[in-house]
Structure formats: C-alpha cells, structure tokens
Length: 301
Image (tube, rainbow, N blue to C red; front, side, top):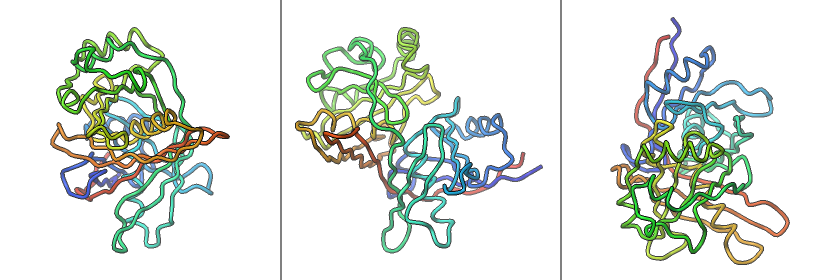
C-alpha cells in the first residue's frame, strides 16, 4: 500500500477552529479519480484538494477540487488554502502560483505577515457571467424565508459565476439572513425546475451590514452537493463582488467588500472580495484571506 500525506487548514480566519476547514493532499500522484472522490467523502469537508504535476511546466501545479459528492471546476477557499500549504512547504516560495484547474488557470498570490506566510489572494479564472433569473418565491422556499425577506431593489435573484455558478440573492436584513434554514425538498424542486443552473442549485444569500454596500454578511447552502451550509465560500463571494461591482454607477469601478460568513455555524470567516470593471473589458474578481494550520497525517491506500 502507498501512503499519501494530507494536511488540514482553516481558511479565511486567523485562529484555529474558525473559518472553513480544508484538507489538502500536497502530492496526489498515484491516486485515481475514484480514490480522490472517496477521500473527499471520508473527510466530509466542503472541499478537499489534490495537488498534481502541471500539464504545462510553466505552471506550478494541477489542482483538483472535490466536494463529498463531486469534482468542482473552481472554488475559492480550496485555492487560498492550497496556495498557503504549498508556500509553507517551499523553502523559497514564489510571489504567486499558477494552478491548472477545470475552469482554467488560477493565479494565487501569497500573502505574508511578519515575514511568515499568512494566507493568499486568488484571481478568479473567468470574468463575470450572468445567467438566468430565479423567481423570488423559489429562492425564499429554498432558504425557509418569506418572499418579503428577499430584496430585489438592487437586483432580482439570478445565477452568476466567475468559474462556478451560484444562485445569488440579497436578503432584506442581517436578522432575516440569520433566520434562513435550507429546505432540502425545495432545493430538489428548484433543481428540477432549473436544470441548467446545475444539479447542486447552490444558493448564496447576502445582506448589507449597517446599510453599507461594501460591508456584507453571507450564507451559502448547497445541500444537493453534500454541503448543507458552507462556512466560507470564496468562489461565491468573488461572483458576488463581481456582480455588485457590475451594478455600481459609472463605467469604471474598483471595489472591495468585507464579507462575514459562517457566523451562524460557529465558524466565523472573514473574506475580502474585490472586483474591477472598465468600459473596455469584462468584470474581474479576486478573493483573499488568512489561513491557520490544524492537522497533518497520512492515508494508506
């Protein structure tokens, strides 16, 4: 049997047992697709990553991302955490890594604090894309809220993506957001009604804190993907930042959003998501945060 090393880190936090936990296999050579999926299911975290040699030697690694049920083309906290893990293991880490992923190339900029690796900032692999609108009553049912709890002045609920699609909806208040509770039967009905969204029908809700458009609270539910609730969702918040920036007045905008997530789960997460739009080009997003080491070990297969 071969032994495969793994480490776990808490992402989007500066203290252990907060943020979003991630398992990373720094050298996954020899693992099959089925074994990767089985390991992700065994860890039962929102995502587990497997690092492989890149197809193009000009890049640093190929990174595969698995939820307990499926492989993802891109996700935020797995890239932040994987970049952090690799930089800590590297005697002379580069300023940034380039990861090959199903959604495209992901650039991971390493952050330092007091000369130590502290976290990472990633650039989403794709520009903002906006797909179908989702009826307010469908979103409210999935979230266990009333239709009046869903705010539609800035935008109606819709599907947005910078690599992975999410249904994004604004909630009228932080109090209403805290009351949200996923209804799995409603998620199944929504997925059947809108199969083009993706079978997971991942729902990202947000509310403005203190009425500030750049100070947000968020929650993400994806029960059909094996994630009843996620403590911190980088890809969803990157899409949210890109969406809100696209709606900002004027042709040019460069905005950052401080986003709290995971509070209701007892795993508070702090995410900085930024986006830029210009009259000439698409809306591009980044997301960043700190990481903390938690566990390390090995698995024999």
